[in-house]
Length: 230
Image 1 (cartoon, rainbow, N blue to C red):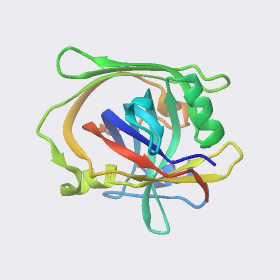
Image 2: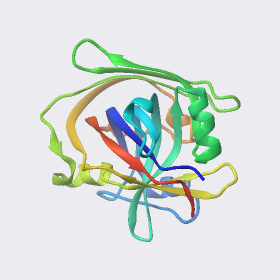
Image 3: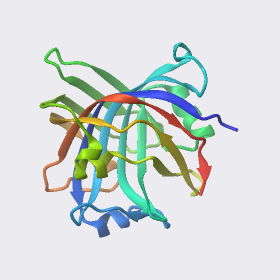
C-alpha cells in the first residue's frame, strides 16, 4: 500500500495550446473525454520543481526536492474536470523508479536544471535520458509580467488549473487516478522564451499553429491520495 504524499509545487509555468478536440481524443485512452474551452481541447507543458516531497504526516525536513516537467491535457469522466498526464519527466533516478513501481505513473528520468536567470525569471532545462524512451528536450526562460490574481476569478484560468484529480495510463494498460487537495491557485500573466521543445513530438503531436497561453505561479502546497485503479 502506497501512502498519500505531501509536497510543494514551486515556480510553475503553464504553457497551453488550443488543439482540435478530435485530435486530442485520438491520443486518449478509452473512458476519458477531452474537456474543452472555447471549443478547443488544450495541450499543456508545465515545468516546475517539487519541494519537500514526503509521505503525508512526515515533517517537511524529511522530504526531497524534485525538478519536474509535465505534458498533459484536460479531460472529464463522469462530469469531473480532471487532468490526464502523457508524461512526467523528473530528475531523480530513485524517485522515477519509485513513482513507476509504486504509484504506476508514467515518469521518465531526465537531466533537469532549474534556477534564476538573474532578472526575476526562471531558467529551466530538461533532457530526457530514460532508457528505451523517445528523446525529448525542453529549454525555456520564463517570468511573471503582471499582478497576481486568483484563478477562480478568471474563467479561462480556472479551466486550466483548478482541477483536483489526475489520470494516467499504467504500463499494463490500466487507467489510474489520483485525487489532489490544495488551495486555489494564484497566477500571474507570464512570458516565456522557449528555445527547445521536442516534448510534443515525442507523444505524436505536431506543434500547434496557435500561440500558447502562458501563466506563472509561485506555487502552493498539495496533498495527493494513493493511486487507484479505475
